[in-house]
Length: 263
Length: 269
Image (tube, rainbow over all chains, first blue to last red; front, side):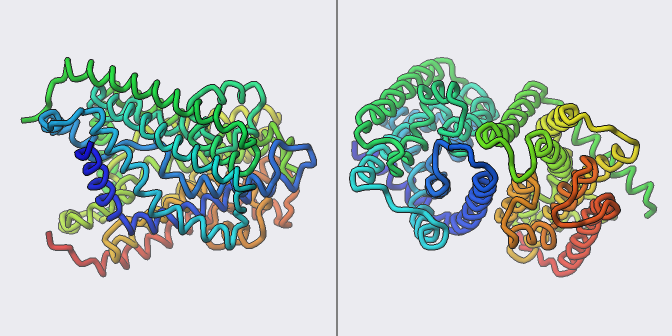
């Protein structure tokens, strides 16, 4: 167990080094958040139709999204991709560790370090200047924290699934190039899920991706009651298990037929 | 060095780039399909919001979709043609720019000719399909002049976006790394100008009219084509000529590029 913990902590500290990227990312995210907020503002001003969420709720949803965007399984682990491409992956096999767990540990660092750098300043600035509101109640805050942990687990399981799929597509494309679009769309990152037509929402709620964004943020807002926590958390965990099992199975198959590139 | 010879060299560069990309045919098809899908998802936002809200400050879905198509076509062209400038930061860092300086052709020509990124066809097709759909839905009565304006706006827009990438590359002369902040102006600019500029708060409007004049290649030409009155009060003549500003913007940024080249100091590696 300690080996994996060391791996997480080493990767975490490596990723913390990218501070200038974090500053650039911060500016980008404030700008993009502002664009979405202004577009929604215009829509809300021009229509009196009843909406599934109020404008202040949408604003908070958007800013939470920008603050935690790096937590989503939207990119691949570049270092791991390079290992697979160069054949360095064979060294990974020599380590006295379970490969799946080792890669999962890398994913944990990849999904938490950039958030650790960015989320706090972004939440602070947006709370001060851009109308980010506090959680609706202490119960909502607690439900938010629990489902954010669920979201990280789910995100790491999906990340690992994408990483393993790269063993089949040497160039590292394939699933990895489709994944961000699907994740962004169905998680609520681009448009909050309640705005989708009702029949699509039914499908989106079954899919795993709403557990990454929509679930925790709406609990935060009190838009979903905190009493639903058990069910929502179970949704996240069941999907995480599904991705972990699928990832493990693929990894075992991949290792059996692996040809190491390079020399 | 006459212009025809430069053009000849440029197209030779492009030919080589295209041929090398087509070596991995399956990979190319996959990447293009992925790019198409990723960009289609941006349009889903527009669809979803219009479905809920009905209209947007006097604009309906096909009208906004038309602008969206226009901006996306323009951006896809610039995105495909300016890869050399986009990756310029890494070039400076590695000291590879020195090699370009000793060749008997301009640096702009060499960087522009570095790659024509074919998979950007994904965004192009997406924008084109949406533009055609929108135009059909509105039953625009096309005249030669209007068709001309669409093409003019597309290339003006491509020039303007290219100008933004050139600025990003120029900054790398001093910062020795590509500033990703510029991505917010290109990708963010596409998102912003997919909607009429008048829907935003006034300081934001002014930014996209006067500072980064992306409205001149989307909002104003669209008004002329749709025959919509302008809330900002501009006339038809201005709306027809406004894409010129895109070309002017590119010319200006190329001047600052030349200034940057003069001040270039190799990293020495």
